[in-house]
Image (cartoon, rainbow, N blue to C red):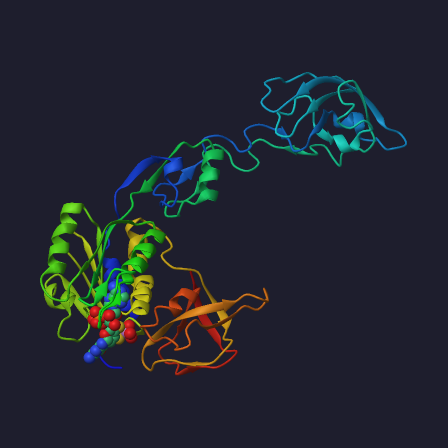
Length: 411
Ligand SMILES: Nc1nc2c(c(=O)[nH]1)N[C@H]1C(S)=C(S)[C@@H](COP(=O)(O)OP(=O)(O)OC[C@H]3O[C@@H](n4cnc5c(N)ncnc54)[C@H](O)[C@@H]3O)O[C@H]1N2
Ligand code: MOO
């Protein structure tokens, strides 16, 4: 199809307009979902000290090296070391300390014997014990100081998203505060005089408004903060009023949906032509795209109004921009090649982004299929509910056959 811009060209224009937001210091519990802007370095060693991996006895390996059920080694227990103890008892030949998992190993000990390897176990553990099984080697069941990370080691580079695993590592490394990006502030605007809040009665020609639900949720998934969510009519100066409001609210991004194609009442296209460029992109759905920035740097997206078009356009253009604003190093969703479970036709000359389901019954052979009976028709908002991924089919491909390897963007 002639005169269409590639997805890559459009995305390049979008990303060229992105200026990363300020970074600030927040306490670790407030950093969930934020993007790290300075490397995370360990403030203490992990583990902090040599400690026991088992409940049992700290011993001198030489005392128990030959222990067996027939010839058990007898040791005298001279100390008890619960977790949190500050003790470091001396152990002479033939002596042991009872020790719990996580307790500091005495300097004089060089192996741990679990309760299970003694005759009396926990029940008989504070007087004399009989070790019936020798530890495998010096150091058995001892978790060494710094074995995981040393003070000052980089645990995470800047640019990664902080989830529960990353924040737990920060806490374990003794870190109380991290430097993260602030959340992008986003305004979500639906356009259309036919739109009515879901649940309200509909007169002829009216439909429930659903794009703001979609886009606000996608913004939140991308760690953005929706500061205003509203609908404007197909006539009047609603979009311009919103752009002015963006300045007052300190918004970073405005996402319009609808009103960008070729009709008589395209309110975004007709009123924001001075701050936005309207292009046709070689993708289906999502062909008509508006994008621009205000003098103050607020990014303005004009997504097509069809619900599937809006969803795809968000994935392809808005989400990468929101992540780039936050300084995220990886702007892409994970992708993989999967065999098609059914055949479908694709639009000529435009890259297809098809709402897809993944059959994960066989873990060694996932397959992909369209989520909607009607293929990629952009109005199928109900079928969108089943979509688990996007199948991406190149512009040159006319149809997908069963078994063809299809690129799939997971979500
Ligand atoms: N003559 C042409 N007509 C169209 C073209 C074209 O190239 N030439 N492109 C088509 C394509 S492709 C798309 S996509 C749509 C995009 O249209 P708009 O972005 O202008 O969107 P609207 O016309 O406002 O709405 C389209 C469709 O989506 C429904 N909609 C809109 N907003 C919402 C919402 N918030 N919640 C639920 N549904 C919404 C709306 O009622 C329409 O049915 O243009 C084609 N036309
Ligand atoms: O681009 Mo439209 O989104 O094909 O339906």
